[in-house]
Length: 509
Image 1 (cartoon, rainbow, N blue to C red):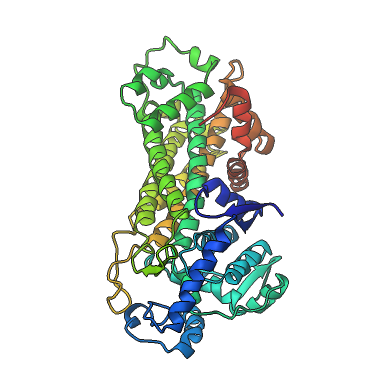
Image 2: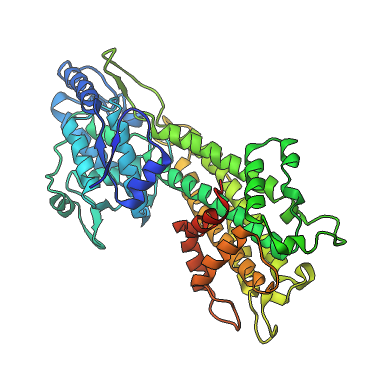
């Protein structure tokens, strides 16, 4: 099995995706086991000394003033996993759970969590063994860590809970047997160390950021294709415009669309027409797409910082031989970034839907109504635009920020929480909705391009069109379009369209 070494720093979103979606395993980098061991030696010493250490020799949250006797410290750790596993809703997707587990190992590898090396080894073996703990999607408030979802992972390691394997839902004990593991006998502080971190929101958010960055490139492609068939101008891509307002995403989007449409006979054919300037959805596409790109880039910076952080409590410092109580488990940075990106991706879908409307509306496009012959008998792409409108409206609802809605927990000890996992979950759904909207625009633009039989489109447009037509034929008469949309979404997610475009015109950033 290929593995990615996890240690102090250096984990990227690409690494996370390879682990989460491509079956790559994890291992500890050189030095990680030694750091873990030094921290654990401190924990055992503090227990022997009966020192007051939060979550190790005390209760949790509002019960932190309750001292736990030395003989009960092990039982405390089992109790925390069981009591905190109160998640509800559908299980999180396998890629999210794999990402969560990898990120928790990454946090352990930094040597600040206070767990044994054998406990970390069990997490690694469970992840690499291909079993997926059943983790209900709802229940985290995004502070004190993602306590609920991480507790459901921890249950499997002690032989409780459930997991998926080979499409079957099995007991936690069976999952351990498949991975050649026995139930963990938790020591002082280990239960808390398993669940006190931001790994659920970071896993969901990290994968959403990766998908959003990929989608932004496809949005530039879709806009370029629509601009061609709507007889738009390339003037709006002129780099001189974007140097005068040097937001980086704006310049990248303009450069992408200019490259994709380069050599277009369709655009050249109306260079001297009477239209003064294009509608905003075409003319301002670099500005709108670019602002969303910059928001996605900001979210990526936040998520990669979080991936390479220690997010537990207490934080053990082997070098000083002490521990610090703090709030690195609070998900505010991730929550704000996810709410921001949620709006940014919703806007990519929003402007795309307006271009779809221009494509199917004969009063705006000059093309046949709903891009089909025998309108009336055939509805063509009329309802495809309805679907895009529904998805965009849904995204607007989900763009209300979750982070502004703090509800105190734990008898008001935890009196401000981030709701960051909710932010990440809805952001992931907004990205998925937006993928479908962009797929509909690509589908409609390809249909419109069929009408330009005597003129060549830009090299990038032609390459994208050829890939789409391999899986989605021209719409001659009405047919069920949901499968067509799903196939184009698959092309977006696989990167096949972009690969073809980049082979034709160079890198699309």
